Amino acid sequence: MFKRLFLGRGGGRGSGGAGGGGRMGGNRPGSGPGGECICPNCGYTAPHTAGQPCYRIKCPQCGTKMIRK
Image (cartoon, rainbow, N blue to C red; front, top):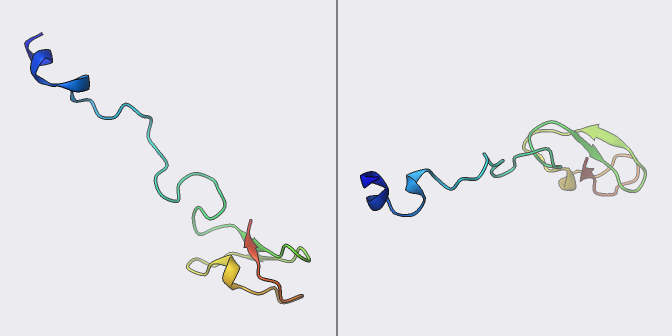
């Protein structure tokens, strides 16, 4: 009981939230080096290269900028 009076709010146990994914965490598009780049126009797919955003790659078949899948 003595401890409880001087610890302030919450007893010093952290924020109480479950472990978060943090930046770029989870399974959304763009999370991690794997995955594919896909052309929204013709459907052409290519493996994603780490450090190379899909939107900077042009589709070799139709020239449209690709997106991450």
